[in-house]
Length: 264
Image (cartoon, rainbow, N blue to C red; front, side, top):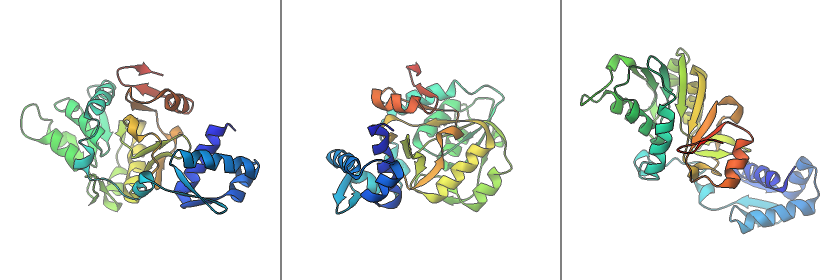
């Protein structure tokens, strides 16, 4: 295992557990305790971990965000040009007559704006996306072609929980488009909200193929709850702000498309 892979594993373990011990990591990774200590030194220098006696704990803004989801209105203000580029690339995958599932999120909301008026059917757990598609101005979609799940509302305007999940179990779609709070080569796609993670899993289950939509700032973030391994999705569409090292790490484990830049 390469040093970078070890450090991603260590970071994911620290996020999941809150703390890690040198002795446990050395045993799990089959390396010396000295090697683990050097890895912890590098992670501390990067601001990802804080070393403590016998191990390390996760610190910084990313750790604080692990269990909390920003309000949808706040997220909508970030990286809007990148989100539009991602949405444009995703919209090209939607053919007339398709049924598509669209999960909650600010990048998927941009996708919904591009799909408005298209002769397709949409299933969504997003209140905002439902409004965009059915608002009676301009080229709105036929309201009967847009299905909104019920459920409990989250800060990101997603409807989640047993009602949403029960509805999605009975739906079959051609494609699903989901956003994500975090992307990590070891941890997968994650969310800080346990209800949203479970409903995202159901959205993935509705579709023949799922596309993840996320701007470059999501790379390296790890939410508390896994909702998809990389093997569960058809690919990730992101923006050109994703750095070369991150592109290489992701391209090794899933189909990666850079908006305006083509597939890697």
